[in-house]
Amino acid sequence: MEMRWSLISEFPSSGFKAGLITVMILLPAASLQAGEGYNLLKIEIAISVVSRYLDLPEPFVRAVVKVESNFDPLAVSPAKALGLMQLLPETAQQMGVLNPFDPIENLLAGCMLLRFYLDKYGSAFDALTAFHAGEGAVGHPPRSTIIYISRVLTWMQTYSKGGVVR
Image (cartoon, rainbow, N blue to C red; front, top):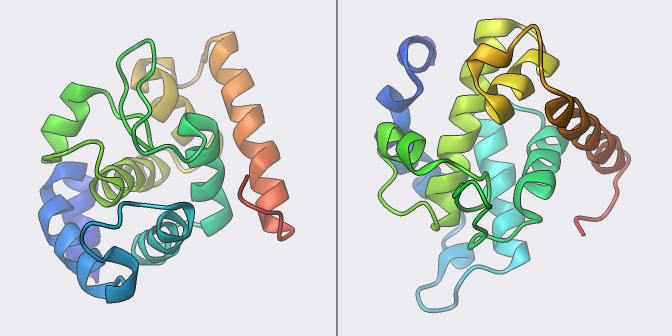
């Protein structure tokens, strides 16, 4: 386990392929039957597995996905961010993501970035700032990022209390 974290802390993409293989092994086979697409239940299962794999609180990951894409794996933002975690194309490419609309790949890469920022900055506020507005915004986030963080924390509270996904 320590080797994986040291690889991730150097740069999030270094452990992506190994992480993807591990997560695919851990996911119940029934959750990824070919040709069925991804429904909300399958996304929830993936969130649970990836959260545990990267030691992230599940309500935190759910809240980020809710705010970023409203659980839509095909979401595209006006800024051209893609998928569940709204990865920018260049970030997805740097991380080794082959298909940013694949919920598993997108979720794993986004969560690896969150884990990286949490380890680097030591606080959820700064990690979310870096995730949403870039590392240059840490310490002085723009108003839109403060609103984003507030929304994530509100949804995180809802999910922590057993709130439903939608």
